[in-house]
Length: 333
Ligand SMILES: NC(=O)C1=CN([C@@H]2O[C@H](COP(=O)(O)OP(=O)(O)OC[C@H]3O[C@@H](n4cnc5c(N)ncnc54)[C@H](OP(=O)(O)O)[C@@H]3O)[C@@H](O)[C@H]2O)C=CC1
Ligand SMILES: O=C(CO)COP(=O)(O)O
Image 1 (cartoon, rainbow, N blue to C red):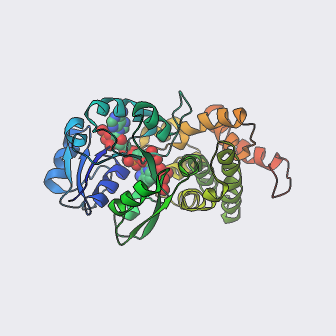
Image 2: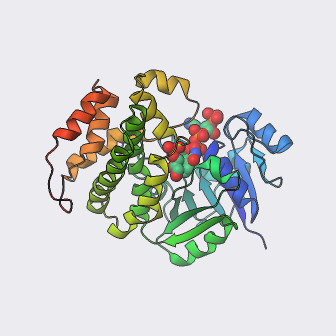
């Protein structure tokens, strides 16, 4: 018997993942926008978020959270991080007991500093919670480019069952039991992607980008390990893999935010001109608090925070980084 997937969130990644799972399982996607629902059902497209992409024809869209989740064997959450709690609370009364709940979002909740699977565990205790993450730019996956991802869950048996729901010939899904590390890798790399985009926008050059990626990996690993993630996870798809993809791609929204900052636009203007989420902008706030709480040095994230929220210029950020004490590559700093 085919498993049933209920996916909440009709943006670029939610729609992409729903289109993938629809190949392997009966899938219903919930979008709050009635026109998007109509378009997915009638034309098998979602032009607002995935221009020119054809979705799997068997994918069904719904305007009703209840209809989407009530018969689902697995729930997938493709809602931006700051709205995840609200949507999950709305879905809660309709979700069947003990079904696994998988997060797709790459961010941390500002008010609580929690990861998304922590929010799932808080609202839906007893439900196995996991995350699907990795270097997965939605707009590439849709056009048939090969990619690899990780499904991270504490329970390996459940992760292995779900692996086949998300996988296709061109989308290879590995399992990992380090939920904390995988989830933090995805959230923390977005700030580094803003930094990399900023360098690209300011024509800082390829060497600068490589330094940002490498030292960015060092600082996100420091915080990730302090918070309970496994060091090796940050060298894998959920860490280095995702960092390289987003830091070097103009398809990344976080890179785009940084790029436009590097070109001299204000954050307000950039956000007003975007119709998609760039999670790193909000995650930067949380990460500054976490860095302090865990006493971890995060020089790149700190400079990005100052550009986003304290009125520093892009030049200030680069000067700040150049002034940062140079230690041994193996040690903090
Ligand atoms: N795009 C990508 O390549 C990837 C994205 N991710 C992560 O996936 C998560 C979702 O991103 P993505 O799909 O790209 O985002 P998009 O910006 O493309 O779309 C956001 C979606 O969320 C909906 N939404 C926003 N706020 C609410 C709310 N309060 N209640 C219900 N629905 C809401 C929007 O609905 P509406 O249209 O009505 O505003 C839209 O459908 C993010 O955390 C992102 O980091 C992870 C991997 C890859
Ligand atoms: O996480 C992503 C790719 O893995 C998507 O990155 P952006 O949110 O920056 O587009």
